[in-house]
Image (cartoon, rainbow, N blue to C red; front, top):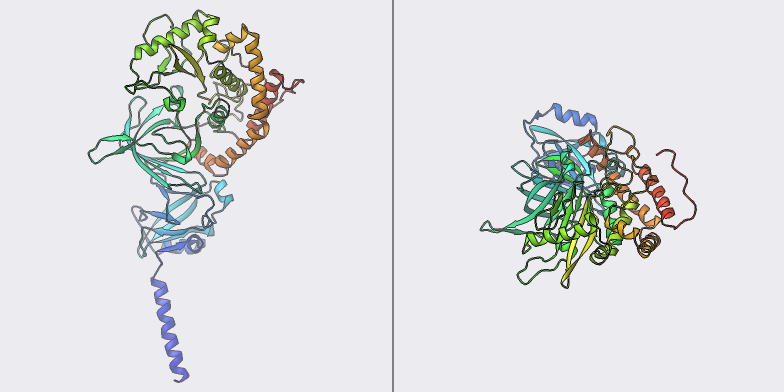
Length: 533
């Protein structure tokens, strides 16, 4: 075989490989091989027609779903913890070998890009057409909610719910259920960004539905969930922080995880996904017919007390327990307690019918976090949950922590454009005398000593400086290192935001701890006041 013949054969083979390579694009490639220069990017655009609609209908990274917010024309990619290929994911587009992806300007997916909330420009294209898109990358889980009807405050509407769990060892990566949704909250419902109450449901073939108890993001199995908007909170952490502190002390706090939400194909922002305070949380008792014999009430408004004896509903209170044998018995019990602890204070009755330990934990958390939304020295109180448990032939009332958005320096009147979120000074003492535990303490030195001793125990064993600062570090990572805070600010520009991440609130919290330590005699010297925050 002569050299010319060999050269011809090699040339033919090389040409064939070149033509094959030029016309075949593997159905899956990785991110690094999809990065191109600006010149190459513009060349593809100039040589193709722009499609009227997106030609990219499905996108997967490392075989995991990337979520599309059509109204923003942005795809949201949730990084799976500990995945070695997370920053250079394999790409699959519709399973279509002729559809290609190209990312502009050789931009990397890395921690700096994620924290900056910078979106990555890319195009999807085939032989003839292209469509332009953006990619947002987060380290938080993603929830996608779809519904046909407008979400209302009073009535549930049908929804489809999907959660992408990006935890390293998640047992189920994607949770999909049907469900119902409504806007939650009273005053918070007036904000531009809404909070939601979710009820997850499973539909059977006969269109009969039942509760879908799911352990979302490693929290307890449940069908009822809350998405807190945190709109009023400059740092977006108060509900999560206080719920954790409540759980650590009394055991009654909710479980919380930060997520990002896409609502009807539009990016909705940063939320806190939370369990609820309900009969399950409180281990309520049932009778032989399966009805609860214990009751949960919510005091949701500052309104005047109406506590004459009777069995009618009390103004500004809401009965939260369903499936009870008699609403009238529940209201009658509440009226009896309020009459003897509020309007006609009876020290002995209040002592025997109040869960003193829960009342102490409640007021210590209120004081620690400067939660003026629960007690502010007025004759009337709000934002308290009363758990009424039957005990023998009588009952006892526990105080359950709830609603913490106006705490840690946040007040009622806030200028969203102001640089500070601290209307309540860290040395402001919260007067809890209107609460039952305050009245009990006024009349009993033993209870006053018990409050002080309990605080000292919590600070030295549970609410320690290291523990609280470690919580703040984890929130910093979740909210700011994920880029979610900046995306939230872009989505809701008229909202409430800190300008220095968690630095100011960390300073506030540590100073607040110093003052509480002084008031409850854990330190002798009065703290130096903060000049500015």
